[in-house]
Length: 330
Picture: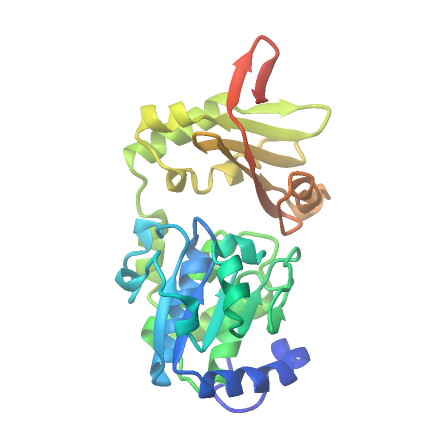
């Protein structure tokens, strides 16, 4: 948030790393910026904000996502330049991965290792693998874009309207419009600062919440119709199959926010949504609240996933089937 050389309190533990980051950026010409599979608003806000900042410094930037970004974020400047294809990594002088939790989620782990190129990791997940030559992990940050809002000025870059809008997009998305437990006074201060720099909050809210498509409403209805409260585990559970998505004409993107709705079921301690988004691929999403005292990252870890105490996820191979005893993964 500071536009001078003073390291903000939020990043005080990373002063040596910030100096190294400046050296790496200044000496690089070609930079690859990447994030995780099925990128959300925080991931896309992060890569586009960082890309715009580095372009201000005269760098050639490639913005990569393993999967296509959600179309509702197309209002962000630079969205059309996001690619799922990258040249051989030997072309790049520096690789920056953000909001990814695990380097495997970039889809480039093996290529990065083989290339021998310098890797910078910037993340806010408590379960981060912390792999990188230079690592910034702040688990207390509500969004990766909250971290970048402080890092970018330290690179000698002024946060302009486009960068501010990208950063605020990530913050709004990962805080559930400032409703989640991770919202702090720092988040609010950063958000206010970004609006002062011209962040278009109206465009952000319109894109995220201004209207849900018919497929999104249909698939949400199906998830709510199936929700059950498990008295043993305290979970509010629902299931979406690949057939459901096809019948509703919906995508995984259309389920955004559904697991938060499930979390509002009375007398439950966490919510659990299983989605068979492709043949043989199942995504699990978990949410809780501070007062419910359930660390859902521990549940996700049992399935090889991770995230935050109150918001986590995982992926497993399998198919959702239903018999007389209920839903199962086979």
